[in-house]
Amino acid sequence: MTLSELARKVRPLIEKAAESLGDMDALEAPLLFKRWTPGETVAPGDRRYYPLADKLYKVNKGQGHTTQADWTPDKTPALWSVVSKGQTGAVDDPINAARGMEYQYGLYYLDPEDGKRYLCCRGAETGTISLQYLPHELVGHYFEEVTA
Image (cartoon, rainbow, N blue to C red; front, side, top):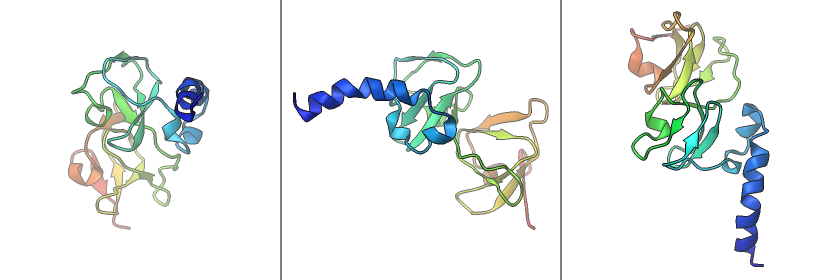
């Protein structure tokens, strides 16, 4: 058996084992997860690695669906959220923001494009909101810049 054949044989076992990882452990090895592909049926909580964004995504609650080529995880925050590291969201430990992630009302986020901190000040009705934009793009709508 060639190395390539062995890799193809073992890959499904690796993906199955990766499903048992918690989100924080999953972020240590996102390449262990199935790649996002169009035409696949996914359920809430399923995680897929999307190589074009180099991020691990999770299907949002109540949003099971069949993936489509024009509904990639990085473009459909209503369906997918970025799996992110477990910062507390406190002003001195802001969460790293990303396009297509779920933001929590009252928590602080660090914007990767401008390096500034922002407070999520909208979304109290549901507590969280998935947005395709970064905090600096939504100042006055969903975020306010923290200047302290």
